[in-house]
Image (tube, rainbow, N blue to C red; front, side, top):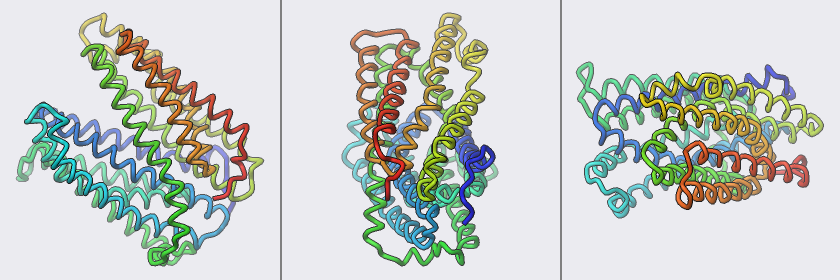
Length: 445
């Protein structure tokens, strides 16, 4: 096996497909929101609420995929190729069980909980109709995440751009056909959005499965043989690595939602500003998340190849690329926020407030581009429990300051968003202390 290169070109060859895939998904979300907003307010609100719940549950698959990626990268780096196939097969079986578990949970919530969460009967009905279809995606998307984690773990991510692009293209076309009833199809509204996305995800799973079969069926990974191997030790390793990531992802998403509920108490305009700013954040995270996933693969592989002396240089290059990528995607926040703000507000005072918030958030994003790499170094080394405790500690600190600036003493929205400095500052400080004092470079998994 050729040793993993840590040159800029090699790093970008892994990260860019992941970032492009994230950008495609970002466009899909915008397209879905646009189409549903043309149907009715109930459609976008009901589907939006259901979508948020769906994404929260999908974090189970994201965490499982993260643990699988780290393990595969470690085994691939140490040339233990047979175990790559066993890890892959075991994770794929777990993902099917996880999908069924999520589906059953949502069936129970639909019967016993949804009616207590929403006041509007119309929005509740819309959400139920949307989720009746959308929840079948658990059986499709979670296994897809595991297949994706294989390619991230071995550093062959180009195919993921094509796969995610296929899903995005199908989703947009099917939305246009099924939401509005174009080209002779029935107009299904929010149910059409759910069905279109489900069909697109099925198409993506079929594509990536066929590609994987044709490319790796006779490879040294023995992927398909791994599907039949029942290894309790590997199963425990996957769950041990993945569970902290699952908890971390779910709580992080819940915290993100909590922030907006608290901002709503300050006023409707601050809430609107925050939702607009969120889109800027998501755009910046197109670059940040691509490099974060790449960091896990590079760190785990270098440790497996006993190349600990090269970790510092690799980390430096990852940070430089991430900082540049985040800057390119959100430089408008600091250099020309006013024209962007004018697209959303006619009132000059509101434009000024949004522009000021953009500037505040810009520097928080720059911090995030560096700090999140530190957290992914810890997780990539296999110390996922430590990563979870670090993030939960920082989230607790963050929530205290958000509460103080929204409920206890209501502050202007740009001051509220400055709590991100506290979160990323704490995350960076604790991560640095951990990396300096622990023996993460030689952790075995």
